[in-house]
Image (tube, rainbow, N blue to C red; front, top):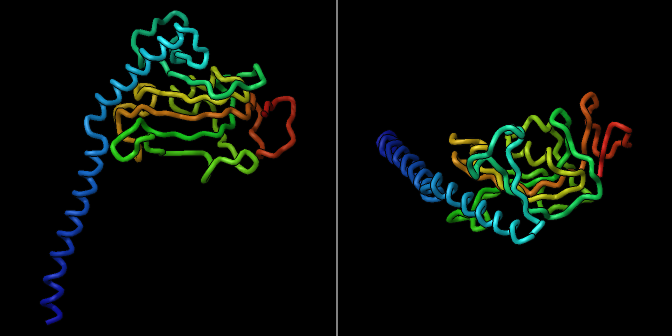
Length: 216
């Protein structure tokens, strides 16, 4: 009798797993349905709106050409740029260089979707609500992140806080990078709080500064 019950339950359990997996897959497909076209339209519309704001004199918005396109290269498309909304201007005019390391507080999210009207938050450098007294900023090389993030850092002054919109062409591209679906526009809230020049190591966050470190 026990063998009979077991032989009945095992196929039932297998079916349950299959249906659950299919359900999760379907939910994800519905969440990000027509994701490429949705992201293309979102960024193109934001680009056009930002150009209009800048033309009207709104200094809180910027359009910045991808850093890999030097002065001799013409940016042909909206996705050759990042879009920036300035949240706060720092008190310094010091910018990081490509080979520097930095410390930043950040959050990263996607554009609004069915279940996430504010955009799915896929990463952040701190836990819970942000508390500047206790939050330890992330540390990494300017050269070690996606092109759009690098472009933002190279144009930020120490102490700046920007909301940065990165098209997928300057982000993670067409491939899924769990939990980020392919074709995703990335939206980062970035606060640049430390710059460490090439040849120096980024210290513990509370370390006493020296001449080669710039910290907010």
